[in-house]
Length: 407
Image (cartoon, rainbow, N blue to C red; front, side):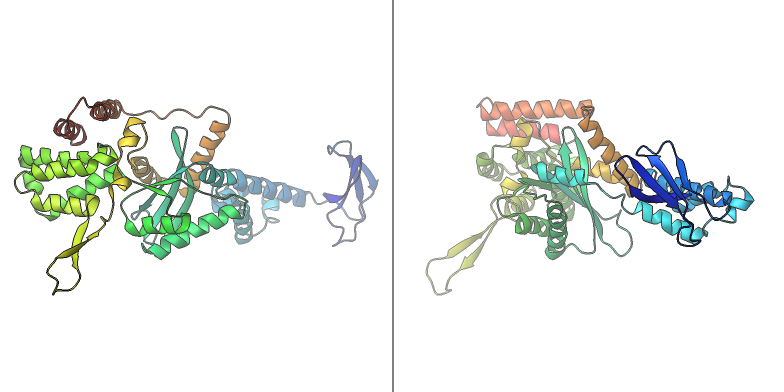
């Protein structure tokens, strides 16, 4: 066996692999294409056929480790099972071989393309999943971007806490990884669930100009949990008028942003029985905020200061997304969570790499949407257009939307 000694203008010089151990000065010369071998100097030792077989076997194992998702122990076991006994005796130990194969797999990490998409795309989608986190971690946090009609992963993060500082550390680590590759992310908007610490961290790292897009699905889930907390679940299920009113409250998200306050006032003026506490919660958390008294108790005038809502309308209003067929929810990420729970991370990375390669060839397929979703989207889009053009009044609009979002 030979190793490359020197590359010349028109040829390659090879020397015996036993050059150091046996002082063998054998030299072989080939063309640059490794053809037409010519032995210049003879070996000073006999050939070792078993050593050649071992080297070929190890190289095949390394190649398989780089190209497949098979585990090192599986690669080693299958490779030695077809060898002759004399060759097996010359093979590296199982422990040594597995370490070598694991090192071959090490560089097979998310490629530069994923980070490039993170920089290029203006919108990013983030979500945390608690059930997928391994022991010692609280959640698996995922950052995704939309490439044409499909979503690909840019970064996975295992987080131990849900604090603002934890999210800031994660985001800065992603930004640093980009900067090391001369990529400088500047997202314009972030789609996220209603988690204040994560939102504050995003603005701290990327700036206050970031547009936060709250997930409509998570908003309805939050309001439903509040109904349960207030003991109104049974009334919601059994009282049609109460259920309809709750649907109209959620329908505020489809109004033009400047009409949200008017819609909230309308619902307050037409509140149904037993809904007062629920309406107060929604108004304080998502629309008007709360008030607290300020000043001196001896003042004759009572002064109040407005405390902004935790999630102001601009974070959850989906009028623009509806009329432009945009993304109102993070449900695609929820679907990914389910699929990921049945896969391994390396397999999921292979899926994303395939999507990016298909995009290069113009073969990235359009995402197929369920017919029921398409029908509802068309209805909501038409309702938003009719209201903005004055064809429907506020009451009619909220009532119509509620029938399409509460199933």
